[in-house]
Image 1: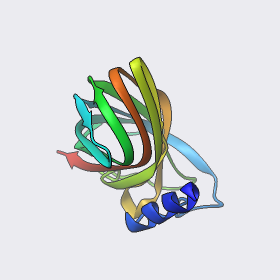
Image 2: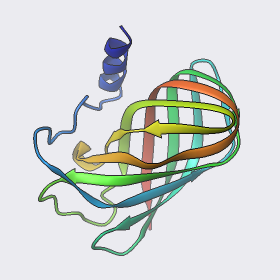
Image 3: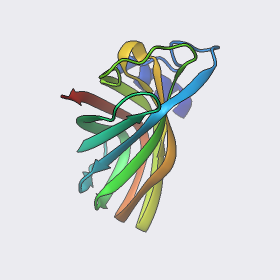
Image 4: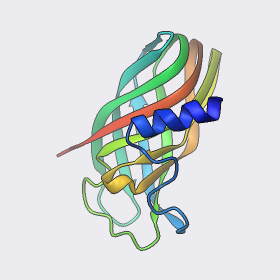
Length: 158
């Protein structure tokens, strides 16, 4: 039942359950680091602003800003956190400046009791062709329990 609800939520967000290039090999093209502020979780949804920097393997660093929202069970309050993702793309993808802008979605889970951990695998971006694979799980202080679907919206900051 939970898997069906997760797939339904992903489809409602316009994100396929698998990357557009499913079946193709994906390669790491860089690292995305996002910092978020204090978060107050509500029963059904929570959200926070993020500031991100992307360090591509073969280009100059870029900056993004946006929002990350969680839909599902989310109860509590947490202090600032940092999330680090490996950015993957289908092999042969030609990356262009600003291409990470767009909407990402995926299943997330986190638990915080004083110091906590969370993980978020997200799919999206330009043509839904990027995968954000957690490298460093978020470290945060507070009291929180969250399970559901995460949506990350990124805008390129010029």
